[in-house]
Length: 266
Image (cartoon, rainbow, N blue to C red):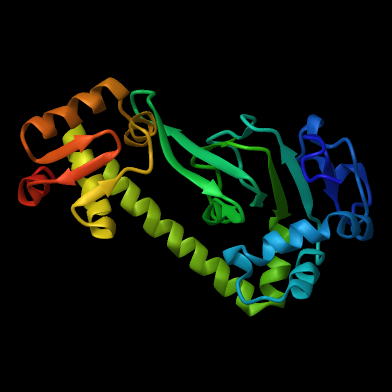
């Protein structure tokens, strides 16, 4: 059976009554399976994906299965372009993307949509917001492709932490990594000028590629990441080209004056 056979398939293990489905939306609760049926039908693809997820690094697949089945769990599938989570929605469960890719966006103060990142499977989604006094999703998540998500309630997570110290360590590392990423993203978005944002972006690419840079994203995608209009971004790239700070041709960028590019950050 294909992972993406239906965008309404959900499997919630060990449920004793429908009252435990209170957090599920109507369109995602059409099919229920017990634990044995779930793992028999879906374990091959899912376990292979989960074994590659940073949260389960170093943990054998049999142990991963045992940990997840300590409590309730659920799988949800969504078709491409489907809204998965609204920013501001309560986060009571850990979501793990097991198949496909998802896009994270947020609105700035001027209601401009800013792309925060593209997340590829297998990966946890907003693990730092499952716990805490203000546990709400900071971003809107939209399926970029057909996706499958493993949903682990907070109670199941706590049992997993108690059962396996390595899983707990991996989870804490994931939270720390996300905090560092968001700190860097906040620093990037703090630049008021488009030139400043371009300079920081190119300098980061310069560390990886040297003075000859091949952009991996289109200008439309970069504009979304920067939170600016594409024509404005194009105009600033042209200005940097005219000033001979960079040489730009399509996705190929050459840094001509590194010192002047760095000066744009001040």
